[in-house]
Every structure is written in C-alpha cells, then in structure tokens.
Image (cartoon, rainbow, N blue to C red; front, side):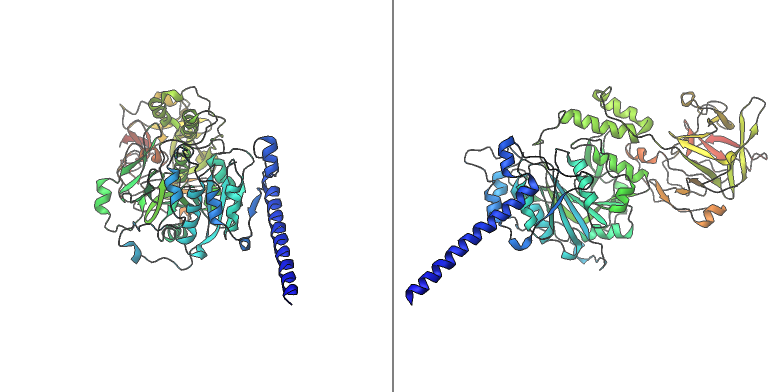
Length: 587
C-alpha cells in the first residue's frame, strides 16, 4: 500500500514539474511573439523592432489570471553593489527600490477638499503613461498608486507606451496587472509622438496623461473629471507636489501657483496675482492658468483630436506644453489647475536619456516651432530672448488657414461701399446680407495674420493712426509696416462688456479675459446683440499673447475696440457721421 502511494506521489510530482515547464515555455513564446524575443536581442545586440502596421498600433493586453510576480519584477533590475544610484535615471534609484510600490503618502489637499462632492456619473478615463528605460520601481509605483487611489469605475484602462526601452519586459510584464496594457514603439519616438500613439488607441472618452515617475494622491481624479464633464473644452491639471529625487520624500507644493513662461519659452511657476488671491474666497476653486507644466493633465479625447493633438514634428521632449497651451486658449478652450487634485512628481536636474540633436538643440527646435506657428509678430521677442534660435532648422510648419467671415454690429455689417476718386474703397455699415458662413462679397472679410482683408486689400487709415486720431478707415493695399493697417489686437487691457459681434466661419467670437469661441445663436445670425461681461483680468506680458484675436466691437460712439493700428482703435461713429462711415479714435 505504501509503495502504491509512493508511486502515485512520484507520478504527480513529475506531472507537476512537466506542467510547470510547459507553462513557462508557453509564456516565453508569448513574450517572444510580442517583443521580438530574447534570442533576437542576443543575435542583433539590441531588441528586434516590432513588425507592426504603424497605422494600427500593436497593444498587448496581459492575462491577469497568470498573476504578477511583483518581487521578481523588481529584483531583476535592482542596483548592483557599487553602482552609482543616480547614473541611469538621474534620481536615487537605491532609495526608490527600498520603497514599497504601495507606500502610503500624506494627503496634502486643503482641509476643505474632502467636503466637496462630485457627480456620480463621472466619465471613465484612459490613463496614458509614456516611458523610456524608466526604473522599474518608479514605474510600478506610478501604476499601483493609480489603481490604489482611484475608484475602479473611473479607470477604464492604463496604457503604458514603451518608447523603445532596452528591455521590452519592463512594460510587458506589467500587463498581468488588471487594466494595464502595453503599447511598444518599434523605434525611439519621444514623449510627444508616444502620447499621440497612446491617445489613438485609448478606448475612453477622456484622456489622462501621466509621467512615469509619479504618485497620485487621495481622490486625485474626480475633481479633474468633474471640470471636464462640465465643459469638454477645459484642459485641467492637478497641483503637482514634489517627490525628492534624493530620498523620495513626498513634499506638498504651494496651492497659490500657476504656470508661466518668459519670452524664451522657458516654463516657470509663478505666484497668482494679488488681485486674484484677494478674490479667491474658496480655496477649492480652480485656478485659470496661461500654460500648464504638461506632464500631468486631463483632456477630453474629442477635444484633443479637434485641436489636432500634439505637433508630431516636435522631437522627444520640450516645448509641447506651450504649443498645446496656446492651441487650447486660441481655439476657444481653457486651462485650469484644480487645487483639490494632487499628484507627486520626481523633478530631475538632468535628462537621463539622449536627444538626437542634443537636448539644447532639440528644445530650441521645438520652441521655435511653437513661436513660428502660434506667436506671429510676437515671435520677435522670442528671438530677442533666444538669439541662438535664429537660423536653426525647425521643420515644415502648416499653412495657416485664412477664414472668411463678417463684422457686425446689431443688425448691420461692415461692408465696402464703392470707390473714391482716389481709387480707394470706402467703408460703411449696411444691412447684413447672406449668412455668416456665406456672406455677400462686399461684406466678406478675410482674417489672416491679424490683418482684415477684402479683395486683396486691407483695412487701413488714410494717415498714420499714431498721430492722427479720427482718420477715416478705408481699404488699401496691404502694407503692415506703414503703421496704418487695422489689426486684430486687444486695444485695452481693461475688461469691457462687448456689445458687438464678429462672426468668423460661422463661429461667434465673444469677448472675455482670454479668447473664447462659441456657436452663434439664431439671434446672433439675425443681428441680435450678444452681451456677456467678462471677469476682470490682470494681464502680464505672456498673457497678452492670448489676446491677439480677442474681438470686442463696441456700440456707437464707444471709444474702445479691439481692431487697432498702433494705439488707435477702429470705432463706429454713426452718431457723429451721418454718412455712416467708420473712422478711428484714440482708445
């Protein structure tokens, strides 16, 4: 009997061993199929590139039932004795490796935040984390913090975009964690294009971008999802706490900061202006910000696509936050920092990876593209602040679309009304004819490079406006250098109540401290006046960039307008001029 029992145990033991070997063999085959195989790595000296159709990204979803061996994952990449803990990742990997992936962190929110309630039907989000040769301990802690501190129903998926790391298993092994997916680039793309690839395959209607060395804090996601749910054109960011690169201590950041920059397009945190501090009676209220840091934010996917995503011709890292921020504001959206959302981030003093042209030249290329595409005549200040950018290649930039539209006040539209004896076109107000999208030729205006054009000519004064207020405005050959051209610039930094409208391509441009864009109502198209009082604004140098195309046509005899040349503005002087012509007056 004992012999039979011993034989049975031996047979079961052998079967168990064979089954284990078979399981491991199949598992390795699956990884080899996804990543090119370890054998391919050894033969070629580097990981074999994924053979995939780049229009249909290959995203790997693991089998959580197989289980994730957290200890083995971390031990495989621990530092060896005597290695410099800062060399590979530009932070103290030794200290990071000592910490649990599930370590607790202090709730750094204002004490009022826990009492704020949010909608019960917030949209789920796809969390997109891009990385290149990230330390396994920080990458895993980023993922685990998202899963541990977020309601499960709000996380549809976590997409890890592996930007061609040396070891494909840094990403692939994490797919055994529920909701985690892996998308591997077949060549080095950089953060910018990697984020676009992640966004393209994301299944959720809302996108959340995170860096790969973060730790999200308590109830970090609902406050941001709430703001996006209420207005899909909002792009929201948390307060970004500091994780020490030396000892990984979690440190609270100030709640009175917003994103700023100088003319060289260098990002910096700046204090909220005193006037805004005095009006902020509720510390849980969002803070409007000119730009975001760019590493951590939430955006509606349809809005991200509508904006054109990121500039795919930017390389690796740098400048993309300015480009996206300018794009958001100038296309009618807004940027906010949400105080009740906190996310910790490891801020490093250097980049641990290589740039194709060096980090300085790559940053210049990226910021120069931003200046050339979005800053128009203000780009001269960028070149003055960063003369090293002059003459540097920056790739091809898209042709700006010149949109036709009408300029209206009440039921009337600005129109050309024949020629003077000198051959110049005269201007006046007439009953609007046609539609906003298809106006009559005499009332159709082209808004391009901040000039207002019709039939190849531009709105201009008959004399230099700087010295001759009250000069009639006519159509002349375009020559911005004369100082006579009427341009789309904010004439006053005072918040005014707009009572005139401009319709551009069927869209109604409405006055506000920053540019907003809404669909016109039927009343607008019939000639009714739109009136909405914008909040008071304190404009600093970089905020003026956001006012380039802010249109505020004022009612008759009001000496404030946003169509100006020099320091003089275009106003309607119908009550003073019986012929209903336009002229210019001092702002």
